[in-house]
Amino acid sequence: MKSSQEDAATCLPANLLAMSKKTFLSYIVLAYITQGIAQHFCLIAQPLEYYMLKTLSMNAAQVAALLSVLMIPWMIKPIFGILSDSLPLVGYRRKSYLSLFYGLSGLCYLWSAAAQSIELLVAALFLTAMGMAAGTAIICGLTLEVGRPDSETRRFQAIQAVSYYSANIGSFLLGGYLCGHLAPSTAVSVAATIAAIPCLVTAGASWLLVQEEKTELKPPSVKALREKLAPAKFRRLLYVALFMCCWSFSPGFGTPLYFHQTKDLGFDQVFIGQLGALFSVGMIAGALFFRKFLDQKCTPRKQAKIAVIVGTTSTLAYLLLGSQTSAVCLELLRGFAEMLAILLVYGLAADVSPKKFESTTIALLVAAYNIAEQISINVGASLYTFVFNDGFAPLIVVSAITTLACWLLIPLLPEADQHLEPAKQ
Image (cartoon, rainbow, N blue to C red):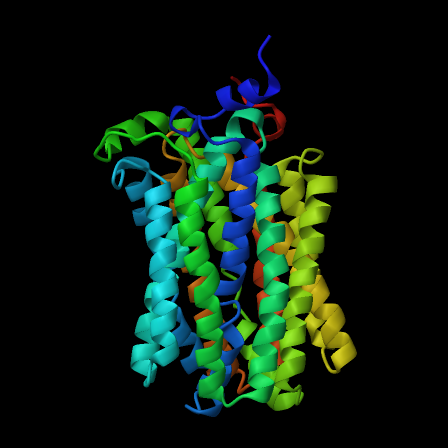
C-alpha cells in the first residue's frame, strides 16, 4: 500500500510531482498576503486617491478614469495565462514567471516611491499592476492543477481569499493612518516602499517553494484548446462569462463612496481606512460562510441566487448611510456579500476550465470580468459626477437594480451534478 505522502504526490500533474500540498498551501498563503498588500487597490489605494483629490484637485470621474489605466494589466490577463501554460521560461511554466513578475512589482514599487510627477507615478504603478495581475493569473492556474484531482480547488480558493483579505485589514488601516498623518505625496511614497518588500520576498519564495520539473517549449495550440471545448462545454463557458460580466457591470460606487464619505459626511481619512479594514473583515466572514454552508451543500445556481439576494440587499442598504455607526455596519455587510459573489464566479470559472489550459481559460474569464468592472466603475463615477450632480442615493438605486437583473441569467449556469460530483481520476 502506498503511503499517504505518495498518494498525495500521484494526485498532482506530472510537472508538479515534487511539490506537496503542504508546500503549496504555504506558498499560496504567502503569495496572497502579498497580493493583499501590494495590489494597487490595497495599501496604496487610499493614499493614491487622497493625493489625487487633495493635491491634484480631481473629481470622482477623473480619478476613476486615471485608475482605469492601472487596470489594463488585469484586462489582458489571458496573455499571462498563455505564456505560463505554453511557453516555459528557462524550462519552467510557473515558478520562473512568478519570480519574474513579483520581482518586477517590487522594483517598480521602489521606482514609484521616488516618482516626482503623476505621469511617472502612474507609469511605475502600471508596471507593478502588471506583475500583480500576472501573478494571480498564474497562481489561479496552479491552484486548479493542484486542487482539481481531489476536488479541492474551492478549498484552496477560500484559503487564498482569507489570506488576501486578512492582509487587506492591515493594508487599509495603515493606508488610512498614512493619509491622516502625512502629506498626500509622502503617504504615497511610504505606502509604495512598504508594498515593495513582500513583492521581493515572494519573488524569491516563488523560485524556492514552487517545485516543478522542467518542461519543453510548447507553442500555444489553438487547435488543442478548440478540441477541449466541445460545443456543449463552450456554451457552459460562454454562459459563465456572461453571468460574470453582468454581475460586475453594476454601476460601481467605490470612488463616489470615497468622495461622499470625505466631502459630504466629513469622515476623516483614518476612519475611512478603518472602514476599508472592516470591509475586509466582512470578506473573511463571507469566505468562511461560503466554505461551511454553500460550497459542497448548494449547487452553483442556488449559490448564485443567494449571492444576488445578498448583493442587492447590501447595495440598497447604503441608502441608510449617514453616520459612522451605519458606515461600519454597511461595510461589514458589503464585504460579506462581495465575497459570496467572488467565490461563486471563481468556482464557476474553475468548473468550466479545460485541463492543460487552466491559467489561460481562467484568465480569459477573469479578464472579461475585470473589463466589465472597469466599465462599471467609470459609468458609476460619471453618473455620480455628471448626471446625479454628486448625488449618492440615485447611484445606489441604479446599482442595486442592475445587480438584481443577474437573476435572469441564473438558469444558464452549470447544473448541480457538474459541481458536486468528485473529479474522476
